[in-house]
Length: 323
Image 1 (cartoon, rainbow, N blue to C red):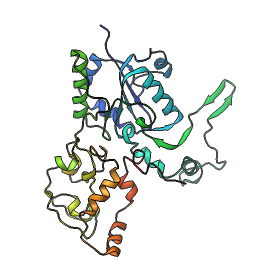
Image 2: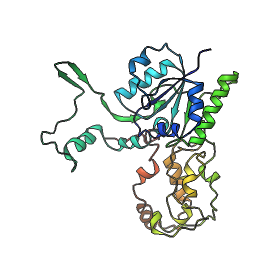
Image 3: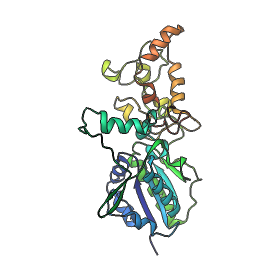
Image 4: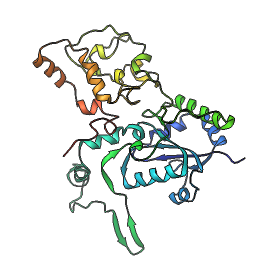
């Protein structure tokens, strides 16, 4: 029998999701043995024409990581959706926009102007920018068009499943792919479409072993500004920890190491907006009824948008900054 076909693609992201797949260690050998890997440009030499030549729906599973921020990302999302039976938004960039999505706080024009003209590290006296089309003796060279708004994968194509995380934890990747292989091997039913795999419905706080004493705060601090109590909730010690507004599933590894949760697993089930949920959590620990004092306390939070929406701005209610 022909092996099930697996594709992995990297759009607007850092590549950490591809590394996380390799971090499954010896499990990668089981994956390579079970699947016919037909497209993984990060790890092997494949061409887009290789994918175009595949019959529609012939790829059993595609793990698509990265946000959609260019015409190339969009074209590949459409192509892989057409060629795949199951398409999975793999990692936070694909599911929620993640760090590339913070570009929605500005514009494509402002980004390119800074990178190619205004940056102190740029030497470009002619202020030349990359052109989407350029004619040379050998023919016409084309580059992708950079979109003004970064979008998530589910905002541009139909997605079957989501595996969250920045990146997803290797042990959870193991669990998901082992389950998928078992389903394909034994004909077991698939999870309901739209399911979030490799995660929990609860908030990260529910898997965090630190104690919560419902303390009230009069100031916020950065991790280096205090000596931590290793057994007490980081938010109650004054650090901005996104645990209350973040989906469980990572094992609370960051907070157990004394690093506040950044929110990379996205919002918990039934939470529409991660930033709004976090604002609500912070409101519950502020020890003041004085509007001026509350405003000063909130002003002490560095970069609230970048903190509360670091991983979810494109998928949030805000989505982007308006002109």
